[in-house]
Length: 143
Image: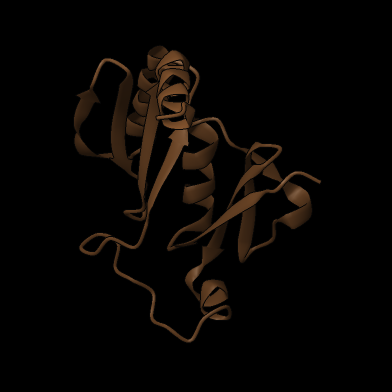
């Protein structure tokens, strides 16, 4: 089995959060969804678990951060093109997301940053694969 990542996020309104994530391209896995949690699938290795605050609290003794005023985590999702970054960002904004920072364009890397309905930050980015391979060659070449 390939390594997988499950990002667990506390949400105030589970149905609204599910709609938001569906709007940006996630699909619901009903097998792991009930009235307290929803498994939203991006790919075969990337899932987001949306958990009501009560459910989330069963996994930790710490208080849940107020993500409208505090940063809990920065999630970054690599996409296949600048156009896809713009498309997903536009969908996120139309679904109620809020901009976090302006577009960053470094030529070899392009990114946007939004807050979901609960204030969790998502960065959508594209990185030129050629640039990555050039960096690897430089790093791995004998000195």
